[in-house]
Image (cartoon, rainbow, N blue to C red):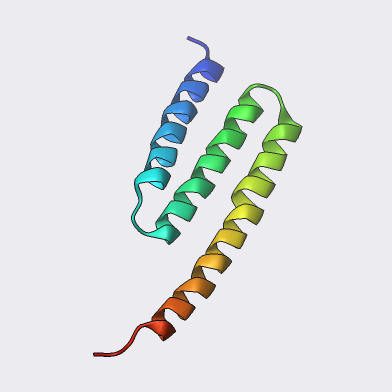
Length: 88
C-alpha cells in the first residue's frame, strides 16, 4: 500500500470520529473544538490530494476563524445565561 493512501485512510477515520463527537457533544465548547479538529483533518486530506490551496483555506478559515467566532459567541452567551438565572 502507498503511504499516501494510508495517510488518507487514517485522516478520514479520524475525521469521522471527530465530527461524530462534534455532533454528539453536550458541551458547546467541546463541540466547537471537535469541529476545529475535523477542519484540520479535512485540510490534511486536501493536502494529500495535492490541493494545497484548498487545504490551506480549510485550515485557516475552518479551523481558525470559524472556531474563534464559535468560542467567542459561546463565551458571551454563557455569561448572559449565568446572569439571568435566579439564585436560590
